[in-house]
Each structure stands twice: as C-alpha cells, then as structure tokens.
Amino acid sequence: MNKPTRTLSLKRELLEIVLIFIFGALVNYGIWCEGCRDDLRILYLNVVTSGSFWVCLWKGSQYMVIYLDRIMPWFVNPLKRLIVSFLSVILYTTIVVYCLDLLIDVFFMNKSISDALERLNYASLSFAILLTLGINTFMHGRGFLLGWRQAAIDNERLKTEQVATQYNSLKNQVNPHFLFNSFNALSSLVYEDQDKAVEFIRKLSQVYRYVLDRKDEELVPLTEEMDFVRNFVYLQQIRFGDNLIVEMEGDESNAHVPPLAIQLLIENAIKHNVVSEKDPLKIQVLIAHGHCIVQNSLKEKKSKDSTGIGLDNLIARYEYLSEKPVEVTKTEVDFKVTVPLLTLDS
Image (cartoon, rainbow, N blue to C red; front, top):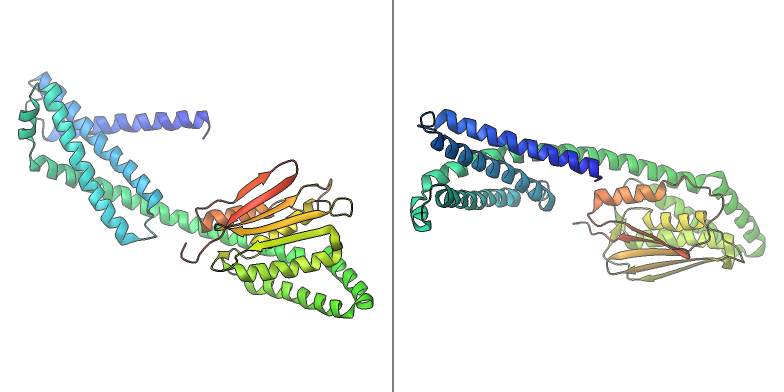
C-alpha cells in the first residue's frame, strides 16, 4: 500500500470514528440522558461516555471480524467460527465495559477504585453485550456475504486461469515447432536406433495422454506429475542430447501439485535459456521439506519463444489453492522457483 492510499485509508478510518462517536452521543442524548438539558456537566459526561462506548464496541467488533475472517474463514469450519465469534464478543465486551466504566468513574467522577468497582453492575454489561452482538451480527453477515462473493470471483478466476494454462500447455505440445522437433528427432532415431524410436513414440503418447486426462483437475499426485515430467524430459533430451542435463531427487510420495506445474518450470527453463554444447543447460529438481525446487543455470536467449504468462498463471493458481506462496529467485548465474507441495485436505 503506497503512501497516498495509506493516508486516504487513515482519513476514512478517523471519519468513521468521529461519525460513530457523534451517533452514539446523539442516541444516548435522545433516549437515556436525563438532566442533560439542565446540567452541562452531565451532558459532557454522557457525550464522552456514550461516544466512547459506541466507538470501542463498533470498531472493536469490526476489527475482530476482520481478524477472524483472516485466520478462521466461515467456509472452513462454520460451527467453530460461530462459537469463537460468540465467545469473543462476550469477552471483549466485558473487558471494554468494565475498563471504560472504571476510567470514567475514577477520572471524571472522582471516585475511588473500590467505589467504582462496587458500581459496576450486570445490567449495563448485559445491554452492552446485546448491543455488541447486534453489531457483530451485522458485521459477520456482511463479512460472510463479501467472503461468499469473493470466493465466487476467485473460483471463476481460477477456472479462467486453468483454461489459459491448459490451452497454453496443449498449444505448446501440439504447436508446429514442438511437432517438427519431435518428428525430426524421431526420423533420426528410426535409422539409428529403432528400439529408442519405439520408446520415443511411447513417451510422446504418454505426454499427450497426461495433458488430456488431467487438464480439468485442480490437483494431481506428485508421483504422476513427476512421471509426466520424466517423459517430457526424455523427449527434450533426445532433441538436445548431453547439452540438457536434468537431475531429480527427493521423496515424491504423499503430496499433490497443480497439473503441469513442474513441467511448466522445466519447459520455461528450456525456452528462456541457451542450450548448446558451449552452454549446456542444467536443471535440478529437488523435492524436500514440503516443497519442490526447480533451479536452472542462467544463460538467457536474446529472443524467446514465450508468452511470459505461464509462471504468472502458476503463481495465481497457488494463491487460490493455498496460503503458501510460490517463491521466485533470480541471480546472475541461476533461476530458482520453489513451489509448495499440497495435500488434499489443505
């Protein structure tokens, strides 16, 4: 958030506090303030007291709802959220009412702390709790509707991004350059090594089958994604020979990733970098500590056959699927992308 935005947000917050304070004072003046018209001191105390109560209860409820929406969304566990919200209202209201009553009695009414404590009663606390429950009902209802609306928007955005990713992946696999390179490599293998040519055809068919079978899924087992990656790497290594070095290690069990996620990172590395005998491309895939790290040596091409949106789409998909971010690190010698490994209940 830049400085002008922060300033605007602060001004809006202060304006809300002032309006709530005035509203609370007017409500108290119109309903409960006996003797306010005859005694300015009573009027002053009632304005300060009621305005402070309304600001603390209203804004406190608002901040409480915002905090709970962040750590405990309604859609994850509605019953738990309801219980926590109800208990939070009671605890917060009790603390606010008692603290404000003590401060007003001690500093404005010149009472001793013991006298102030004796004056505290359950009637004012009960009214404050009911008032705060009403405010929270409005806040939670508003937060629920906004969350539901945002979830619907995020769901549609994810569908759009998945379609774009699937389209790009299919396009990249069936575009003339890929087919030309694959058939060119295959034509050479037919004369040089027929067994390897048969294996090449089998790997090529498995690549297309995986893309078509998994294109509509949000998550796939990491073991299946890595099998797909190995097939894809095999095809590329037939094309580039020893100039393309791909190393893979780590435990692939009990984890899931978005389909084509790892393959996309390897494909990007090949697209964006020189792969030659003078400058071989080395790609390392490390699976450890709940993450998959794809790191490649950096020798960027001057011209790239890439739309540049593949990695952005992957980051956006992870933002929807998990709170764990995709980390991208670029230095003068290498490029590294770290993607979280997910579970179906995450």
